[in-house]
Image 1 (cartoon, rainbow, N blue to C red):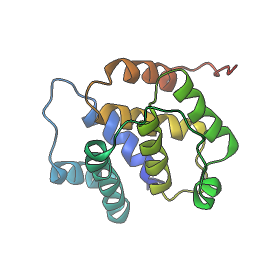
Image 2: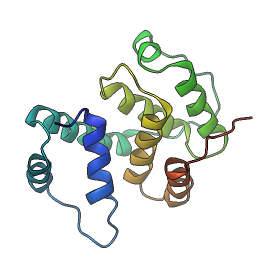
Image 3: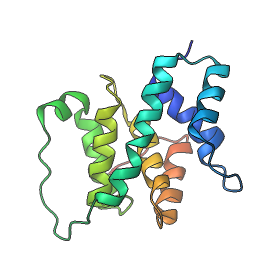
Image 4: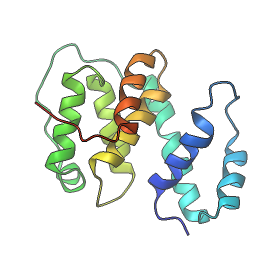
Length: 156
């Protein structure tokens, strides 16, 4: 049996959502494939709901033009440790994430409802957020290099 919603999301991303030449599969087709592979129905529902959370948020968000200090809520602090929050700041500082995208990433990380979110899991969520937004091909490629890079990242 598979372990988490993020495992399902990664499976979908690697097998369906990142296929450039293929039309986007229907929700039902995704559900059937996930059931065939052996994921639990409850986890499939949670993963598909998580994906739906990407769509409306991309249209509603506006870009902030002024940098500001991000204050994390108690729930965010509980779910996102110092290392993850620092890496998010790093991604924003190097231009991979905008302020609005950072907020969407935080929202989607918290929506995973997991207590042990690490940098590797966060990288996948960033990749999915960037993929879901038009015009983010360069940032997506830079993030994809970070996700698939086997070497540890050095932050300055």
